[in-house]
Image (spheres, each protein chain N blue to C red):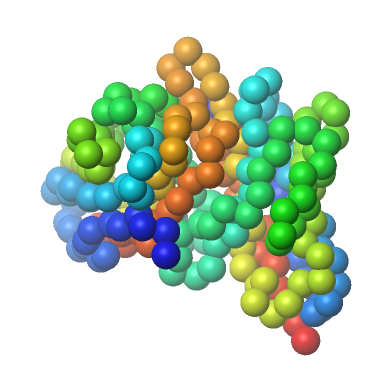
Length: 114
Length: 112
């Protein structure tokens, strides 16, 4: 049991809509990273938040945005949804920022865009 | 961004040793190389990480040559439950921060 939870489990939206996905970090972790995983592909890094500040970003457009709260829980917001946004969205928490710390992943949110 | 390359798939039999190699360019000087395991409908799970030479834990070993342009995950005596997708992960640090780059994954199939 990793302690990282995500909500909702599944979500169906239509093109153009906006979506908010939520992640609760493992206790004691101050860093959260978000990934998009298309079917049959590896996770693609969206961004990382450390102590409420964005600490790194992958090749995703600005319509992908995030927040990290004082309790280190996090949100991923996606505006103007496109069909290609259909994927599993994973969050992972770690004890510190960067890439050298073990990440604990949640089970993911499956987003379907119609 | 940094890029990683792994074999798409590997087959093995129970009890054999499996070695999966990942090539990675542009890895940052101070960044570790990390390997994760993923089962269907689950998030990835940490296996092992290292900076250089050899690292061993209770489930795997990781070999990293001096130039750090590749790494090899070694799974001793695999079992059916090791059937999963294995990913290498490297960091790519620049002025904007650190991006975490997963490979495309190696699907390991273990047969009896």
